[in-house]
Image (cartoon, rainbow, N blue to C red; front, side):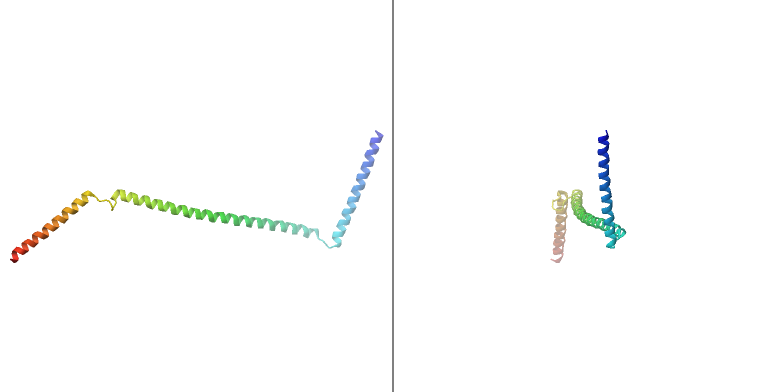
Length: 137
């Protein structure tokens, strides 16, 4: 037990010595910094400033990336709107043609009516001409 205690005491003395040595090294370092007129407050402010600048740069890069993505999405939206507009125009035209009937197809009723009107018109013209000729002869 005494041996263990003496070992612990010697270990503590060695650790204490190491701590004193570290403390003296720290004192030397502080003295060196003061000797070089190095202000720890400025170092802290400069570090915070550097961190803030780095964060700002990261945010600017993120903003540029998001702006690029936004532009791509806006272009996609415009393309889709154009496609939808074209489809709506096609459907509207199809609907109008189905209601009114296409102009390329012949409507038999209209065609017959047109032929009847043409025949009647020719007949009237011929009658007028023959009557006119009779009067003039």
